[in-house]
Image (tube, rainbow, N blue to C red):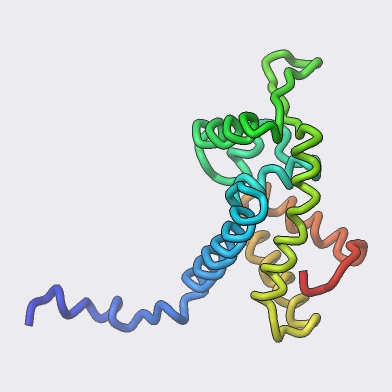
Length: 177
């Protein structure tokens, strides 16, 4: 037998299905694919576009640079996403009054109308993925994910985790979301 058919012991002993990183990646991919199926069918946009519209509606990611940081993608990819959303009439670019070099992103009335439909899609997908989980299990899962974010050392992740912790008891809705 060739060495290529017999991986080194470290690889052979590694159980991909037991890897937390692999499982988190698969869950994210599955979740994102499910959201994309719904957003494409119901709204005519991708899950990334829906996420951007939702972030803008909630007052986050007000510039292309903010969105690039949030999604971990290069500015040119964000520009293409913004161009598509602007072409659809969902957002507009507005020069900052304070600093003319800064271009802020804002939703149009059509963008806000579409943004109002997005949480229902997110909730349906999460309800399906978390089917059979108790509210306590969902709370525990969220607290563990926040700890992972805190451990990353990324200031943006720490801010997100801290703000989620601070508002944990103030959010209306089901604990399964």
